[in-house]
Length: 149
Image (cartoon, rainbow, N blue to C red; front, side):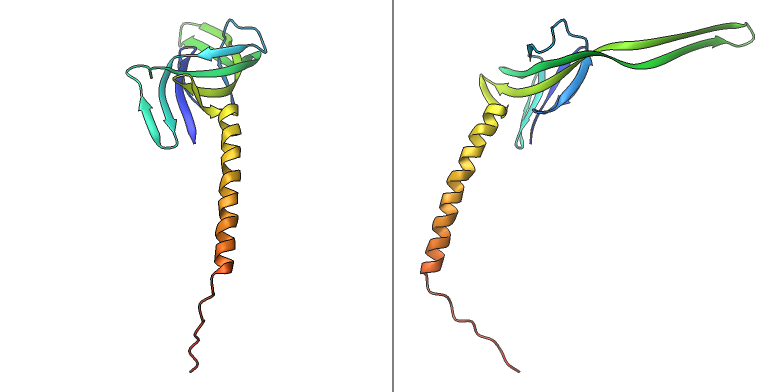
């Protein structure tokens, strides 16, 4: 499984291609591509690349799905015995981003393009499996010995 840890909107997120995430509001219109270049960590099928502080040449591309507001948070301040009370609410402005691909040095290591190449490789493996099955069928079977008591 390939994933990356990025910094976006003042927070750090663990992102994977094909999933969407809510981050603090970005100044980008809906349905536009966004490139997040503050990549702190990349894991590619067990191979880990740790940045100091950023991984060189690593980017994460995504598509802005929509802009929305988060859940309401109630802030209640009270001073006992003083009859002082303040009740305020807050809703965070968020941007929902669908992660398309994780790139490393200009090459897509996870995402739609990487999945397309992965789909062609198992087809080659299936042909070799058929060849192995054909050679096993041509080889003589070993005699089966059973022990009768």
